[in-house]
Length: 406
Picture 1 (cartoon, helix red, strand yellow):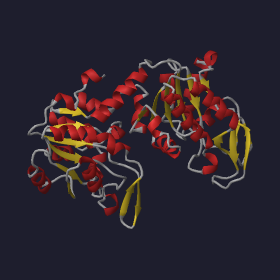
Picture 2 (tube, one colour):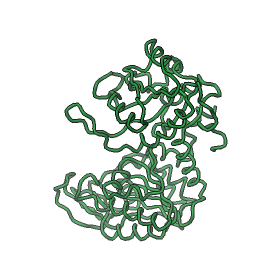
Picture 3 (cartoon, helix red, strand yellow):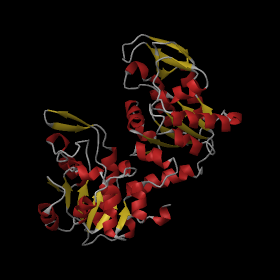
């Protein structure tokens, strides 16, 4: 796919104004009106693209969303807090303006000198950002003459700045280095070009967003390990009793699961479900717990983590794997008493990577669990977009990438 997509390497930005769509929607802790960035990954991975343009004496206009202000401007969701951090990272002053469209913004952009940069206010202060609005896109298009998308975290969304804005730039549109890396790694994985055994670990609660992935990857995967809320619909369809465990009630999911079981019943050694789980009598860290077989969970109890046998089995498979992809925790890891499964998976992947495996991990929860164990630097590639990564694995051309190719 990369051959068809222009990157920032295809342009010289001297005397040009680059309008860069980034994803600076980073997790923060707000205290006494000060913002502490919990995870800098997305920002740091955008820096090389920005530096390339600055080094060629281009002008830069940065646009991003932050949080879900639903079209209503508010101090809480302002991007202004990022200017100091960006200035430190880039070692130049990053200007800021408290709007992202309009005559005053255009004036501020026109005042930029070569090698200068301005960050504009949250795109989602306009409800039009989330509705593929042509007029909003046209107003944004006045702010640059080369469009650069380096926002992999939202490239799967049909939002104005992702899918409509590029149309106004003709052939003068491209992706940044962050996007290029994400596409290359995922393409490599989807082609089944990784060293074998290839192992995919899928967890989290939302099976609906991941069921299509299983159909797409089962033909080239050696092992698919399924944990967390993902596992219970599988157990139920096999006739197991899952008590009050989380489950999405959806006829389409049931139909797809039946299809997977019917089609692959002879090679079901590919899909590995937990054998035992830690169950709780309420959804809280201090709940009463016991370990039971995953297909025999009593009423009034729910599975909140994979059990010791399953941890051992999953880690054994990971240890012998040469290519590993992981998205989603295998338990309610934000509760310390139900975090052992997810943390064990994180450590096992880090150890396998250190011994030569290639690992790619996406999704905020998976990355957060790596950080809990100080393993994040031991992984081959941390994807900046959980949802975008999942949609890529369904073999879709993501809307934001398609917009650059057109």
